[in-house]
Image 1: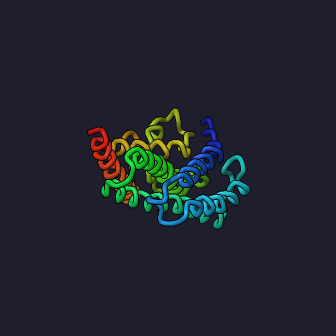
Image 2: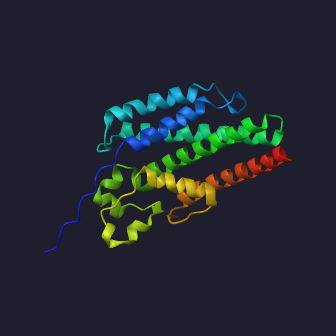
Length: 217
C-alpha cells in the first residue's frame, strides 16, 4: 500500500504583500528627474489593485477567480512597466552626468531593488499558471513549467512548491549574475524575460560603476 503524497499548503499572502508595499514605498521617494509621472500615481494604483486581492485572500492564497487573476497580473505589470520606465530615466541621468553624484547612485539602488521585486512578481505569476494553480496536483504535473527548481528533482521534496521568495531569489541572482543560477528557465517566454532583466541590470550596473569611478576621481 502506497502512502499518499502530502498535499502542498497554500502560500501565505504576507511576503507578496510586503514586497509590493516596499516597491510602492520606494517609488514615492524617487526624484522627479527619473519619473514619467507624479510620484503618487504608481503607489495609489498599486494600493487600489492590491487591496481587493488581500480582502479576497487575506492570509493564504486559497481561492482564485478570473477577476482576481487579472487583478494580480495587472499589479505585476504595473510595477514592472513603472520600474522599466524609471530604469530608462535613470540611465539617461547617469549618461548625462549632470545630477548630484550621491543622489543619483542612491536612486540607482532604489531602482535596482524595485527591479528585483517587480520581476520576482512576474515570475511568480507566470510559472505554471500562478500561485493558486501551482498548489493543484493535477495542474502541477500537467502544465509546462516555466522554471525548474532543484527541489523538483528530489523525491524527498515531492510536496514542495515554490513561493514568492523563491522567485524573488531568481530575480535577484539574475540581476547579480546576469544569468540563471540554480533555477533554470524552461520556456521561451521565461528565457526572454530573464534575458531582458539581465540586460537592463547589466547596463544599469555598468553605468553606476562608471559614475562612481568619476565621483571618486
